[in-house]
Image (cartoon, rainbow, N blue to C red):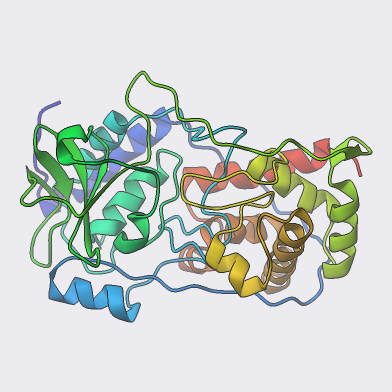
Length: 356
């Protein structure tokens, strides 16, 4: 594919092209609202930041420009989860080449510090987060946290298209390697998303998607616990559901969707355990994400709080669990992220399948 640039006046065209490529990956339709009873519970919110240049580096230090949810800091904002881990490794089926192709759709979008909305502008980690979210991977919001995700690549000579290139120490800038010594990135204030030479040796290189034609690396996962009534951890879901005032079926459905009931599942973004809690979120809740009972307790607290905040709306509670309450507020409902809309639907479908 040729590398072309898009003038600011062409943002509508860019968005149309983005919509086309999103449809290729199967955007899901939003689902209806369901009401559940909940009790009060506390939630934990994180902060986020970003970037290269003085203003952007300052953002990394101060926490300005955050669009994160309650722990992950991802652009899609996974409040607790940082993305869903299937029964083994990355389940997206997409490759690094897909990331490059999608990133080029944003060429010409102006750099905006803290930007995550292409209609307004993007910063470096906003671009990478946006691209990878559409490929099924929720990256943390800021470059220094993104630099901890995925497989470490030893040198630029071993980098493949789609790998993330990080710069400076501490990390304050990120780009998507396009191959041939070039990268796609949002450089700095006054510039636009563009393709250019990799201008210096990256501090860190990470691979979060497999190469084209290759299978994702398997993730070591625990075997499901013994089932009670056909559902693993059924007693825990009942106990913690009663404690927090949320439906045990909801907790079981979230666990099924997030980890396939695997107690030590790990997502590409670093979410852990049965309920796929990000480490910072788990710490804020005072739970160990790899301990099934504690993980369910933490998730129950989050969901109970979200259900209370959104007047019992299950759609919004699940959207907040996946994409962060900040994004629910920003968009005035379920965010228009294909991954989040699919997540809301999958959990509600799973609720009809589990028997407790």
